[in-house]
Image (cartoon, rainbow, N blue to C red; front, top):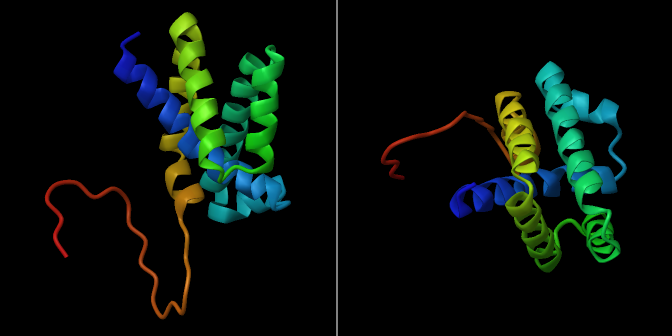
Length: 142
């Protein structure tokens, strides 16, 4: 598998895991995940959980990596821990292409379910009006 593809899969995995683990860490139950966006939220939640379970199952066989996974679960916003997990995911994909394809399939399903919108939407401040849109392509100027 190409190194750019491996890096993209690893980065995308971290991008979905971090907000999911943050919600889990805050005590948000599966029910809350389903309420985030109705049916799409439930699917997105289950795909994020599947991604977490897949990464954890693959990487936890090494005690030092298992410790890093545990740290990511406790402090998902820590950039050093994210970088360490990303490194281990890239290393695992490099030696096991099947694992990379499995992650890519889960990421595709998660994207199709709108997980990028469900888990990545943050609202802060005094919001008078909120407009949420899908993907924007091309030259965008403000």
